[in-house]
Image 1 (tube, one colour):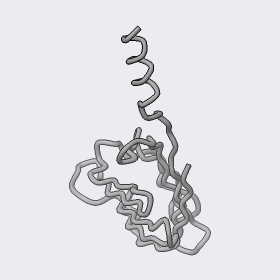
Image 2 (cartoon, helix red, strand yellow):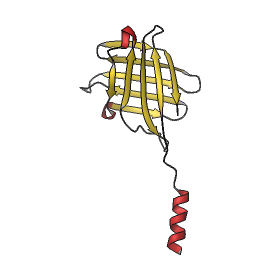
Image 3 (tube, helix red, strand yellow):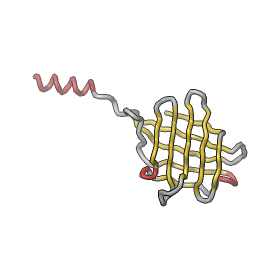
Image 4 (cartoon, one colour):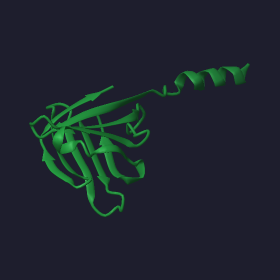
Length: 129
């Protein structure tokens, strides 16, 4: 009986494991956009569950499609007030993506250097689940 009560109390006290994610649309103010998205866990630190997904459109960003591997994300923070991502290129030498987004003001900045496309973007819209 004690074992059953102890097991039930641990089960009820354990935090629920839930998942969510974010999707950010980066734009230079023209018809071109770059979407950056990933799945996250709603646990302490809101960790990434996998790779960053990239999807570019328009003349400027259509060459950017695919992923940035989780191993190349050297800094990630989402503490409820700020999202910050720093990802390196395949050789781990240069910044491929640096994204800062303030959830309270809905303002941010992104530096992109992927597939020969370099840009500094300040028109950013992110959605979180």
